Image (cartoon, rainbow, N blue to C red; front, side):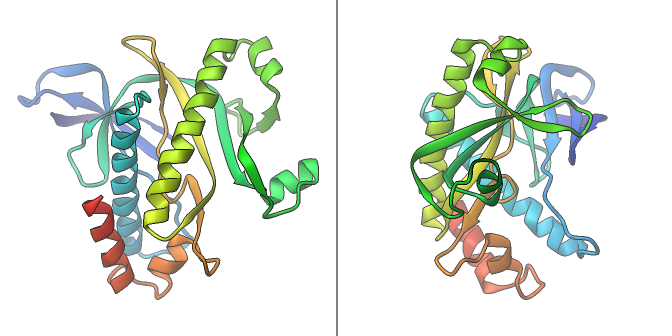
Length: 241
């Protein structure tokens, strides 16, 4: 497959047409997405490229592991660059689903949970995104009441969050990190109507911490360079997995 013209930008992700190898015919219901990454103001382009590359590696491997567990994702195949992938076109549900293994400051502010408190099981929250920059935590009943999801779909999402948590926690533990919390988005395959995981899983969407309280970015890029031993070691470990 080849990359076609740019279609749209959503957040920091850019989407392109997917073309057949002759470059003339559009493949329906498949698009190419360029991996995004969180960046700091004034950050050098080499660091941004390194972050995008390692995030893309992580997402791709996690998608493949999740598919092995019969969890449907929007991943289709590797893209035309090392930081892109071909994905199924999805009608997104305007909900961000947060999964917590450990209480965060936001949970403390809302419910009084002690920051850093470990939960016995994954705690999930629904955040409604109205595409106007407003994100609001809503209840399961409200999500169903305003027609965002039905009971079966919501149950499937929560079951999928549990599977994602197990697979991602195991994956990041091998890299020396604990998965504190993560966010995911879901949608419906435009071709089949099937509910899918339709968001990236990487160092931007997963809150990770090592035994010294450092995040992956602090570990890998703490000397201001992607050309360090820790970065090379992590890339090698991810590729081996």
